[in-house]
Image (cartoon, rainbow, N blue to C red; front, side, top):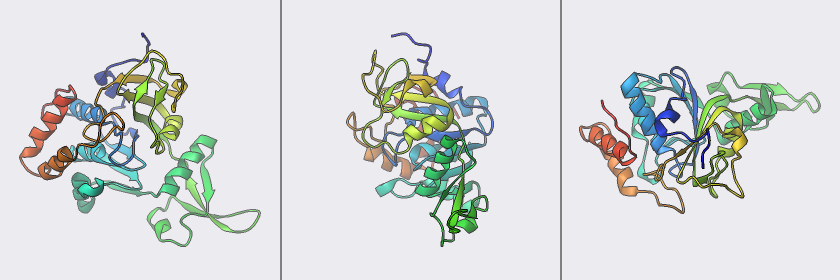
Length: 274
């Protein structure tokens, strides 16, 4: 089961450029998030003082992104939702947003979808009727209104979204990078098509998949990380750990936080120091 694409977690986080990386995380809300990767990236930052000035791209952002914001690694976030569902607000993000410590690129499901479509089509923008008649255009001066040359109708021109590295957590993958990600796909497949580099973390590497949601031709690296989405869920392998998620929300902002991060890192086989 040898393949040049199979690497370990430390090698995987080294694929993230030191400065200004546009980094995408797969998964949806508290499901199938690349938690092990995010914590390993935090460990690299503490050891090397980089990567810095990350732009995080998530269809929905959750606890994995909140941890990196709390560490001061993120300068921009683009997502249509950032939170912990029934467990409340994402505490680091909420604090950074309130203090103006992070640039929020306003997105909706439509703007992310059309921005990705533009990149897939190899063009600078994708037209849509979305956002017309709303105040969102005032928040995004880079999003322009244009006239349809055939009907004269006013449309929104969503600029192409580019991505340097996409990290997707899978249920199973093979050495070539073919991967199964389950029923809740989010925009994970699309992210693998627009990213310059694609990293698959997976619960299990098997010799060969007979079907796949993501195809190995676009994948650069495969990392076996059993439990790699914990404490988020990875159905049907394991459920969301609600108690751990509550522990996180309670620990942020007090002395318990460092112990919690160290414990979580050790659970994923990661050594981290302040």
